[in-house]
Image 1 (cartoon, rainbow, N blue to C red):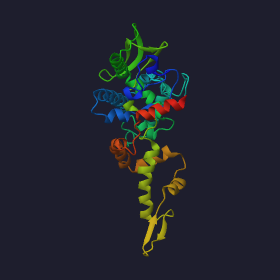
Image 2 (image 1 turned 45 degrees about the vertical axis):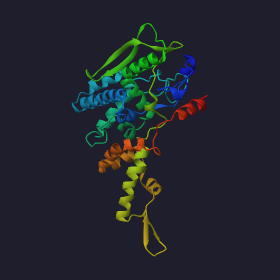
Image 3 (image 1 turned 30 degrees about the vertical axis):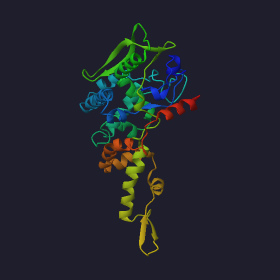
Image 4 (image 1 turned 60 degrees about the horizontal axis):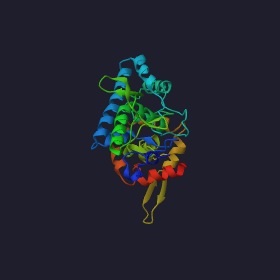
Length: 315
């Protein structure tokens, strides 16, 4: 049963600022941190963005200072959140969340491979581009944990607007990242509950079906485009030469041919190798992602109808 039905709101997704989730199951939706960062006109998004950036910068700082054990201690608060009803599976899954052990391995990986020093990883979102087995579900889970206090405050605000009663008791709602103290702290507050399950409402403007900032987009539109230029310049065996009707020569290098020839150890390893030699590529992707997301033809932004269709399809 969706939030609007459970609380008899007589409103559908078009009338609500948050995702009208079905609290009995998970749906394949994810918080996209890039929408937090680029929604600068929204005070709530600005605050959540600051918290998220502060968390990542602090972790990276600890690794750079050699305080590995301290960094790993901070991963102990990572887990798969069920309160948003987002995820890859249904029926309250154990799931594949961002666990402490997994995060420790991720950061050990990026430091041992000098991804920070070489500019591959400078922000949290880069993990999804360069780190194997760190998909959008895990990044979304980590983001949820870090900005939990912001989500709690947002939930309370929306409940106040809609006249939804919160639980009377002050409850431990989990840990959140305090960017001022650089510590995880317990959020004690009144909870929104549906059939005794704690629920966090999430603004629909930051929720997506698929990330655009990912290895596939980066590889196709930046890395392979650069490799096309290279192969044309050196006249490699991948160059296809044809003659136009006017007799002039035309040379082409197809991305599919480059993929077959060069990607032998997986896409993420490939983009790591190429980016190590072409550091400007990932910075271009970072600089251009806001424009990509705001472009109506390339955006991953979900309309109200998209969201309603997703929940209908999941039935």
